[in-house]
Length: 142
Image 1 (cartoon, helix red, strand yellow):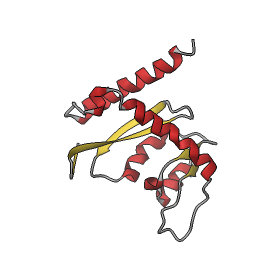
Image 2: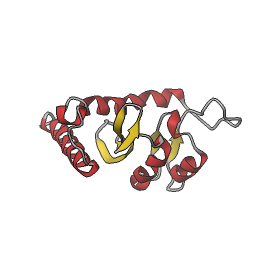
Image 3: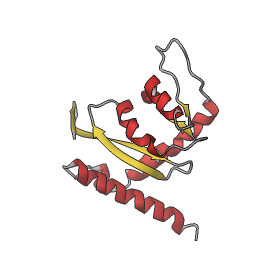
């Protein structure tokens, strides 16, 4: 857990599929930037994948890491950039699926109130909630 103005905090980084179901979940300290935490999420990228992320993930090294396995980044450029990379606002609208995933996670009281003091315990509870989201999705399909 990291320190910020609000006290002890933790950032959750998630990689989801096109339906908003979680694939990889990681934690980083609250005072850390978003971009360094993304490096742990890139292991499951496959050729032809389009990765959608917000402006906090706009870095040249991250774009190269996404393009290395043959995936394509669709990340809006930061305003101070001189060279603006390729970006599709139409594709970017699908990023709401990750926001919906985080909204579903907040319905689990233990995660929303962050009862866990240790990051490993918090990550375990986060993964249990992700499993429950997966099960709910496939339960309704049967």
